[in-house]
Amino acid sequence: MPELNVVDIEGKKSQSIELPKEKFGVHVQGAVIHQAVVMYQANTRQGTVSTKDRSLVSGGGKKPWRQKGTGRARAGSSRSPLWKKGGIIFGPKPRDFSVDIPKKIRIAALRESLNAKFLSNELICIDKVQIASGKTKDFAKILENLKVDGRVLALLDGSDPKTFLASRNIVRLTLNRASDVNARDILSNKNLLVTKTALETLLKRIQ
Image (cartoon, rainbow, N blue to C red; front, side):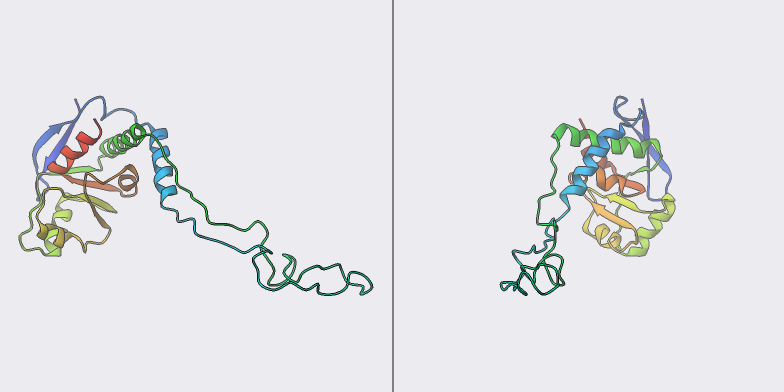
C-alpha cells in the first residue's frame, strides 16, 4: 500500500499515512485530467468580445455615387466591409464558452492530479503549520526547510489566521482550501503542500 510521509516544519519525517492503493501509485489517466482542465479553462473565458457588421456601423445611408458612368466600381454604401471604417466580416460576437462534464469525471480528475503529484514526489504533507508571529520570513523558512522550489499550491486547512497572514506575501505561493481546489489548480503549480487536515478532506472528496 502506498505511503505518504508526513513531515514537521523542520522538514523531518514525523509519521506516514497510508493512501488507497487503488487510487495512488498507479498509472495516471491523462485523458480524464485533460477533459477537466479543458472545462475549467473554458469556463473562465468571458466571451464578451464583439464587433459591428455593416448593419451596425453608423452612417452609410446614402449611395456614395451613381451606379454607372463614373468609371469607378459600383458602391451601395460607405459602410461596406471593403471600405475604411466599414463593417467587419464574420467578426466575433458575444458567446458562451462554458463546458460541462459529469461530476464523476471531475472527481476522477482531482484523484488523478493528486496521484500525478504523488508519483512525481511533489505532494508534501506537513503535520501542522502554526506561526504565532505572523511574519512572512518565518513561513519562508518553513518552505526552505521543506526544500520546495517553483510554484507552490498550499492547502493549509486547520491553520490559524496568523499563519495565513504570514503566507499570503510569499512569492509563487498560492493559497486555497481543500474543499475548493480542483485538478487545474493542482496541475498549474509544481508542488502541492497540504496539511493533514487538508489531506483528509481531499481523500474524502475522491472517494
